[in-house]
Amino acid sequence: MDVKSKKTVVIIVFSIVCIAIIINLFKKDLWNINEALLKEEVLSIENSVETINLLDVTPFEWDVVYSFEPYTPKDAIYKTIGYRWDTISETVNEGMSQIVFLNDGKVVCYLYGYPENNGYGISFESGNYKDGGYILKKEDDIDFQIERNESHVFLKNYAN
Image 1: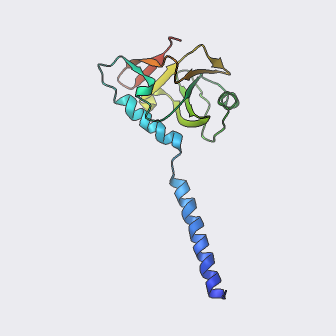
Image 2: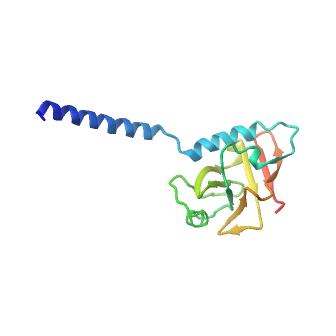
Image 3: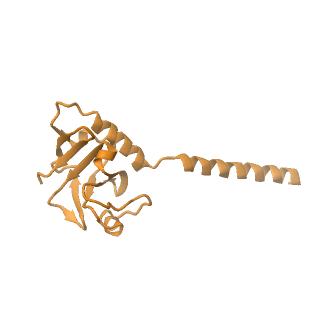
């Protein structure tokens, strides 16, 4: 291979690497995409509806969902769900949501923050509790009461 051909190959390889890096910078994580879809579904619940099954508003596959209490450390969350990812945050105040949906052991949706800032929230307790988090499985009672006010829609399940 002559010098000109080597330069051409290097330029092509460098261009491919740069394009891959740029695509990854703008690519949203699956859990962020699904959170936006979940928000859209929850906010579209008709005002006349008072109770809804969580499966009816989750437009993605999941098999278990965790609700963590305020101030639960990241390490406890990682230990509970058995999965680490970069964008997790610890709740810093009462009233914040920290909801993690998993499917086959992988995070598929992550809801974090104040319901009034997010426009919606989800809260539940269950008999299945581990390291600061309540656990619901797809086959559990996942009917949620709907509470509304001027700033957000809130789904609650405390029947378990």
